Each structure stands twice: as C-alpha cells, then as structure tokens.
Image (cartoon, rainbow, N blue to C red):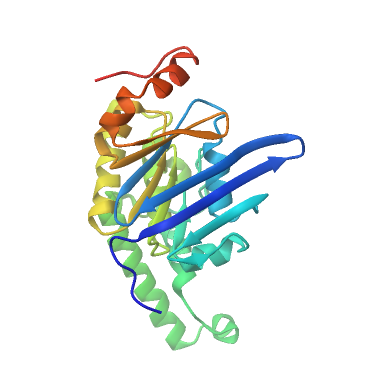
Length: 265
C-alpha cells in the first residue's frame, strides 16, 4: 500500500446515518478530517456530536454510510480494532482507573502496543520484564509531555478535574494514535485549566497527530481549530475556517435559538 500523502484526509465520512429506533440522530453526514490538523465539530446540545464520535470509534455501527481511515473502511470494525489501527478518544465524563496511579493509567494505554505471549505474561519472563520497564519509561516520557510527571505516583482520583482530563488525554496518546478524538476536553474547567488544555491540544498537533475535537467553549474552538464543522439536529449546516463559521448566519441562528452563547469576533 502506498504511503499516505499529507494532502489526503486521514478520516472520511460519507452519507452517514445513525438511527435509534424511530429517532434519527445523524442524517447524511459528510465529513473529511485533514491530516495533521485540528478539526472541530460544534453544535448545540443534542446536535449529534458525541454520537458521531461513538460511530467513528466503533461503539455503534452506523445505520448507513461509510467511514474510512487512511483509505481503509472501518465502519464494520470493533472498538479495539479501530484503536489498533490508530484512533483513540476521550469521553465527556472522565473515564480513568481511579484505583491506579497516574503512571499506571498511562501504562494501560501503552499495553495496546505490546505483543507479549500469553504464557510469558503468566511466568513473568525476563523478556517481559524488560518490556514492562521500557513501557514504564515511555509512559513517564508521555507524562512529562502532558505536564504530569511530578504526579506519576498519585492516585488518579486524587487529581483535580483539570488534571484528570489531561491524564485521560495522555492515556489516549499512549496508544500511539494517528487520530485522537477529544470529547469536550474543557467541559467544567476554569479559564486557566482551559488554556492548559488548549496548549496541550496544539502541542499534540505539532507532534503530527491529527485532532478531532468536540467542544462547547467557543473561544477555545476559534483560537485553536484549523477547520470547523457545525451540526444541528443531526445535520451538517456549515463548514469552514473559524472566521467563516463566525460569520455564517445558519450557525448564528442555531446558537441564538439555544439561548445565545455564540460570540462573534
């Protein structure tokens, strides 16, 4: 297979439909995520953003439509298969192993890239011990990247919300993704914590990892996104650069219809 061009989209979604019984959550969604960029998906509550993430990552199979990652169809893949291909994610509600340390949480993500024989795991062979040591060193390097190395031995549930969200991003990065899907990484955070999250997301892009981002914080979205897609009632109503989205009358109407919260400029 030929190497992927930087000009090729890393993720393509065509005519995606997701129906739950008589409710259609997504209707005929077409989306291209450019490689090495930050692509945001925004929209009022109930627009279908998290449902879209769940379909991309294999939680739900789509009712109709195709999803391609690096040109390969993944619409019929299971979540662990999609993760192995190079897509990771975080969740609206932080999902950590609270009975593990910060370091151990990141190490769980690294285990996806370990290929150890079953019997070797049971016998704790020297080769496995060496591999575990290497895994720990790699996890510590990742904690340094996300700014939590000094808290490696702290239990995950002892961290404040902002650092718990950062840790979940770190665990997602530990799987060595090409594409990371971040579901509301700034939800519930104060201004300082939001800035920290925004800087980390930009640093992730600088490492060559593509970011697909769902977020309600419009200032953050407009500051760091390269492209934005807007959903409303399960349909795509707009797409473009941050400046184009800020001027789009359909987007303004969608947000004002939800009681405001969309700032222009």
